[in-house]
Length: 224
Image (cartoon, rainbow, N blue to C red):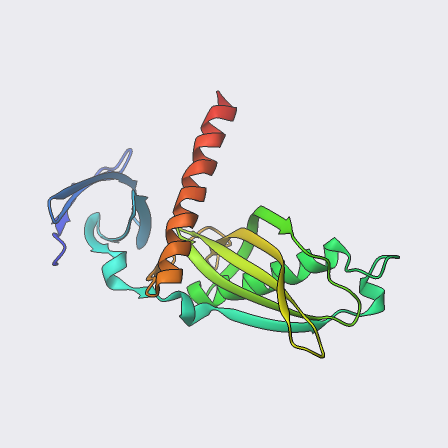
């Protein structure tokens, strides 16, 4: 599909461009503030990412999902730890804070691998401690990007307790975190789309999409 292009008129006082693009019958309308030195900006409408490149108050529109995208497997990360006595409470099981630190670390690495930029943790959206982890247990963490917004990424993490002798595995903790990609000026910037392929990746994508919408709905209700 070839994006349509056009030119915007020059405005000295309050420069802006109203962008209209047709992709398969879908009309997208965005007002994009620009300046004489602006090179590019990004906007998101629905499930579509767009890159606006400004040339002397002209613009070119590229549907980013067609321009770039990564599979979850391209950025997935797996780490392994051994729970030591200093990481445990008086009952011999892992401090929750230790597990959370590991989760945040591996999730940020998955987000960085996906976008190729600096990332910051925006929120821990869910965290469930399902089973205890004891001193001497092997701890396996697996992280992958589930969903991508304009500049944000939801990363899912599973923490698996592995018996060091029998190799029996039990899911001990699950978490979902949101990260935001930053450009060189420490401002949120657009990231590549996500291209789920396997049935499990598609399931995680759809579930993440529901979680994102549920959070938005809740924020709207709270702000009323």
